[in-house]
Length: 83
Image 1 (tube, rainbow, N blue to C red):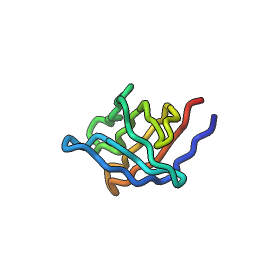
Image 2: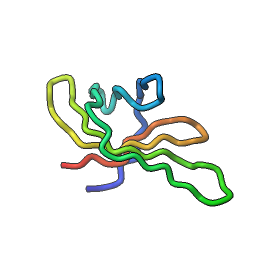
Image 3: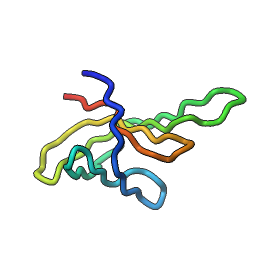
């Protein structure tokens, strides 16, 4: 497993959580948020929002993926895919 850091297109829910994302030309539906981390540095701004999600491709292939949202740019990336 390696750190990917590949930018993705995300469609979010009203609360800002990812509902679906497109990565490497494939669309995945977020089935469940497994973990949610917001690293906090005392006295400093939030840098990123990390999520581990259970996702499913349009062909039904399941996947566990770590997603990150940069607090400054609001861009999402795939950090890791777990096999």
